[in-house]
Length: 401
View (cartoon, rainbow, N blue to C red):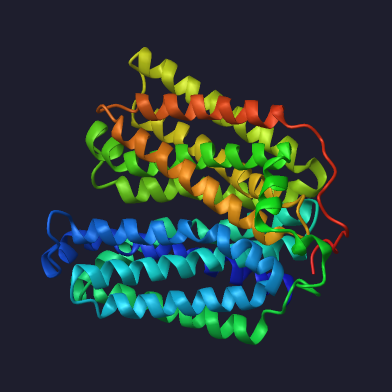
């Protein structure tokens, strides 16, 4: 599989997992009416079950991908994703719905672990950050398109149509990867590193300070971004009374992340990932502190907040691909375990932080901007906490296969 084709497959894999949540968000109330659960919202339970499924078995799939290879784990995960989506579309009670969504989430977790490991196998140095930058430019269309598409499917049909669409997307990924995705680990069971127990593999990863610092910094950065996504509608529509302009403003702001990601793909091989991470964090902290100061002076209007949001989301375009690459880069022979730990740690941290930021909304943009500044400072400290260590690998693969 050529590099451009793999970028498209990587982006579609990540988009399918994100759409499994975003397509269902507009349908939560309709699910509650169709499937009654005692003491809890069926729609909310479905969303939580999926997220739990994504995170709960990643640390199991990681070492498995190192021992058996990336391709079989990816194909198995994609098949589980399709199977779970089909089960969701036929769900008749809350238990069935929750189990089906959990199954779909487990498949998504396996897909992510395997595809991240394949990306690490194919690239090294700046090539990995460049790869994630290009995939991210495509991925960022999903948060804008998916909720609108989910609402459209809800208006013209049923919430079950969203699950049928996810099953179709998963089937496309399954057929495509089955025909075109090669095994990226030449001898999955022959490498001495893969004979280590999962415990020793994870212990070695956790003791690698640059990689661990990058994972924690990624969780903080994306936690602030999740806080923005959960607060954006309330701020634009409630605080600034921009109800009709909310969707185009959100699309405009998100476009800056895509532009920054494309720019990062051009710069990373010349400037280096660590320097771009520092630049991104300084931008995030700087514009957020300007916003906090403007709010204190009662001069933070809609235009000013939009420009500050553009700066923060542009910083995301630099931070996400580079921190992802720096978290996975040192681990060639245990890329599966590294991808699994990366996924589990960052998902848990970003979910907790994002939920806390969303709950702290007080009718103004203050809590969000303060969180951006504080988490940016903490991430900057983690980046500076790193010390150079030799890569945990025995061979250097080609830059981009």
